Image 1 (cartoon, one colour):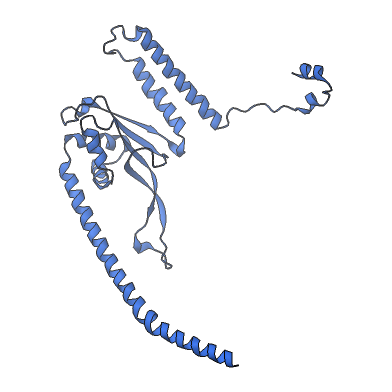
Image 2 (cartoon, rainbow, N blue to C red):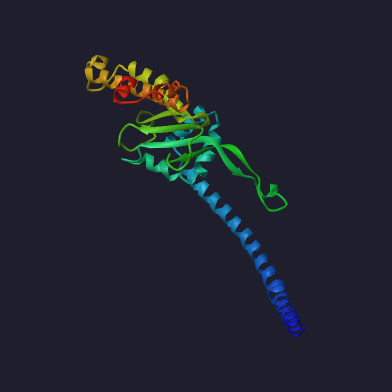
Length: 266
């Protein structure tokens, strides 16, 4: 009884101390302060984002317009939507690196379903948020995000600086589809239906005057055809379209008694 009484007294004193100091004064004040700071931080971030977008919008010239027009035509978005997406992208600097002399050799855009978080207004009562898949166009290096939709790409043809006057000659545009994550099928279609026919109809091969009659060009085209065939067979293997016939091994190994039987079975 004595020990129990002491324990109850100490427990009561401890509870009063905690209730009087931490729970009733410190936590609500810090929580309120955190909410205020969080709200102010969001407003500041939104303000900075608007300033950044306005600065980038002011930088847009004929080179950017060329990219925007190609993307809008290929992906079936309005030019205004594409422009807004580009100036809001955190990888916007890759475009400038692509335009620079001896800059990036390629500029990639993915257009695919991305998990988006709904606004706080649609949060559940328990504080959790609803996520949903939405189509999004974004700049990418091609090595950090999974590719599950459409890839739009720009390729440089030289190391010269890209200007508004030469962008249509120095930059090539292309797209290939990767519906449901089937990259091999998308690449196979792009090569077999677009690139190979274009190469085989090419008349001007630069310094090679013989054109398609040149043995090196014929060897090159043969290699491309062979590569497309390899893609096709690889895709079919992955899709389990090629199945080996099942063999009953027992009828071959049941009567093996000596080395001569092994040779016969072989």
